[in-house]
Image (cartoon, rainbow, N blue to C red; front, side, top):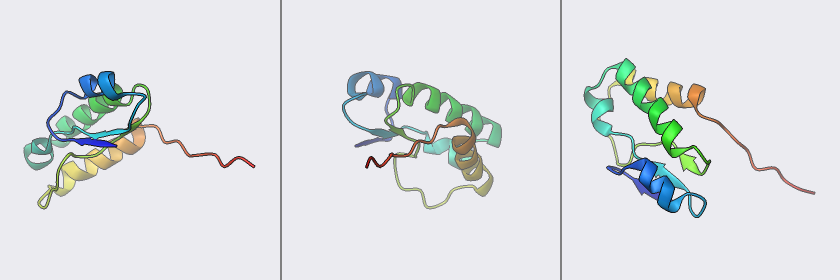
Length: 92
């Protein structure tokens, strides 16, 4: 798995997709200074770009000690509603 902070996630998916899991790529600055609408829009855009062929984990690319509650909540909730969850099936 590769975790990215400031990376073009479409390029990361193009180069690494299907080979390894990629994660991150969300601009932390939006969590700190953005609006809820900006965070929702960027989260949807990132999921559409980076998760197009699965193998993507929605996350920020670095540690974050002081997030705004409303923007962090928007990031998580948008990921839940716009992202896709899959589970590993256990074969007998």
